[in-house]
Amino acid sequence: MGMTISEKILAAHAGKDSVKPGEIISARVDLVLANELSAAPAIEEFEKIKGARLFDPQKIVMVPDHFTPNKDIQSAKLAKQVREFAYAQGVLYYEVGRAGIEHVLLPEKGLVAPGDLVVGGDSHTCTYGAMGAFATGIGATDVAVTMALGEVWLKVPSTIKLVYRGHLRKWVSGKDLMIYTIGKLGVDGARYQALEFTGEIVSQLSMADRFTMANMAIEAGGKNGIFAADDKAVAYAKEAGVKSYQVYQSDPDAAYAQVVELDVTGVEPQVAFPHLPENARPISKVGDVPIDQVVIGSCTNGRLEDLRVAAEIFKGRKVHPRVRTIIIPGTQKIYLEALRERLIETFIEAGCAVSTPTCGPCLGGHMGILAEGERCVATTNRNFVGRMGHTKSEVYLAGPAVAAASAIAGRIAGPDDV
Image 1: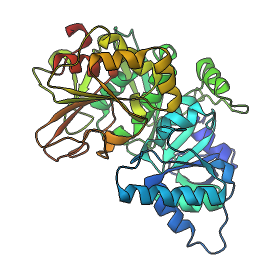
Image 2: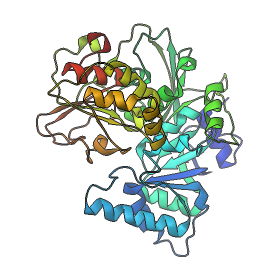
Image 3: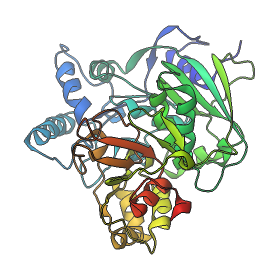
């Protein structure tokens, strides 16, 4: 019996000829990631390990991005703890002003390669599956142990094969495909399983779209999301400075827990209603939903391509007078490119606020907290109760096109409406 991409990567890193779903393995990691929220408790646990040393400081990355720039004394204290550990230990550390949102930053810096095994103290570590890597989130205690051993224990997940066929309509992006997919699977439909993205549509998707889709594998309960690394992914990796990589393909006789065929020809831009990402509706079925705020950015949709889409819609138009619109580029590099392309100018002329790269409002941290009764359209990945502020606020998930159009209309709207 053949193996899937995920199984092949895990087998290679476990030093085994083959693995099968359900098997418990100890696997060598290529990279360990933590942000300030997960790094702080991981550091505390690491320091409890008598005589422990980092297995390889250059394979450990710490990125303060959730409450940075520090929003209060507590977040400043947290960031300081991580910063001092990173400097003392020599790990890769990316400071405010030279960094960005971790899951946008790491691929951009060439720190993730096709065929890698990456673990991180953040559930959206699965983003790197867009590059053909097995990437998954782990808890802070596991981060501590992995920093010491360079190995992580995992249960090999079974795989759901998603086959996308047909043709994409204008304005339909990877975000729309993923909201549509989660609407079909449910938020626990892929619990502790790998989501393997395949089909004729996949080759048409940009890397930005693939990052978005892999990012939200966890929103379906997935252990990881993964694309086979094609020429587009390899070119992206090489441009980012990756020198060594391994491309894996699933075997023709690989066993899947489920194969889901999705004809996306008729799929419209999607909106996930509160309070679950599975509450997917096509834009034509949304109805009249007035809004108070729009957030465009995050590790899901803060890439340059996302900002270009939003700017195309904002060009020559104004944000509705009753709507606050916050644009958050994913990294400093993306911010600079958006500046050079005059996208930032377009946003500001339209009446948007542009932020330094940060997770900020996505987790209800800062830079756009919602009051009771307020509604927000966001290109983020979660819309749970209280996710962006008050427990009686509402978050509607969408792609950059719908988010920008909604900001202009003052209600949830599609690009064709404006």
